[in-house]
Length: 135
Image (cartoon, rainbow, N blue to C red; front, top):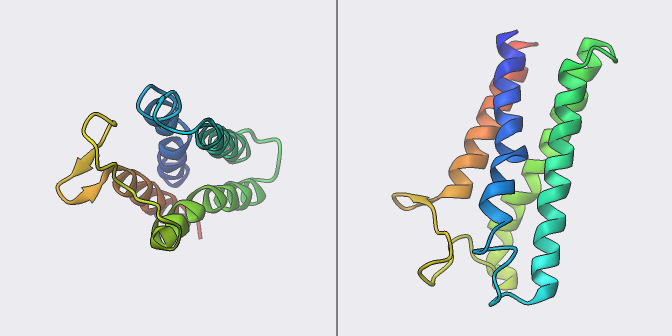
């Protein structure tokens, strides 16, 4: 059970935290952002959270074979997390940035490491560690 609990903690990190971190005045309702960008942000957050809900369902519901449920949960977690890291690495190609440069935009960091990198990195570690324990 501990392995699935670790996976669940990681899945909840990308399922719940972005709902609060991004669907607020500093991001999705930020009047300084173009409406189209805000729409993309909301779509991304809801898509990622939906993947997380489905991953938890497959991990815990018992409606599918346990091994299949774990495998499906892992694939959905990868589908939610890899695009974040790919986007972060590719951000110089399209003028993106992980941390807002203006004060008051909800910047969360841990020293020099941006908060999303810490959250999603920890989520990935929990998920992979949980999955390895189930092998």
